[in-house]
Image 1 (tube, rainbow, N blue to C red):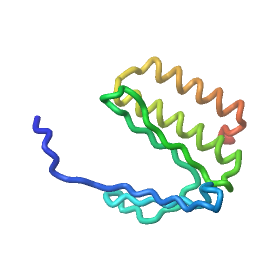
Image 2: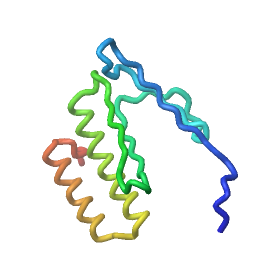
Image 3: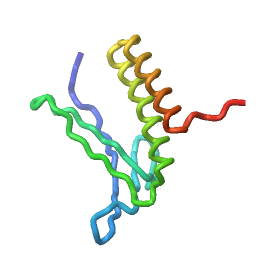
Length: 116
């Protein structure tokens, strides 16, 4: 397999801050995803540093994001992480455990979708 870079793509995040350097507006663009200046209220960004064997991360949210929105954001992010981890590793059993925890989290945070 050839690891030669044949294309690059950019994802851009713009953070508007107030006088106290608190995020008040977030916009992001992804040229390959045809997203241009989409608004966001929170972001979690992680990079793996292979040399240091450590995670570098940025966690930001706007001052106007509600606690209810943050609970939903975390619940959905945890579910997505379980899917990503399973796809990357094939570790089905532990991902089922994580999804069980996500249900528990959603129940405790009162963010379970209503069922009819």
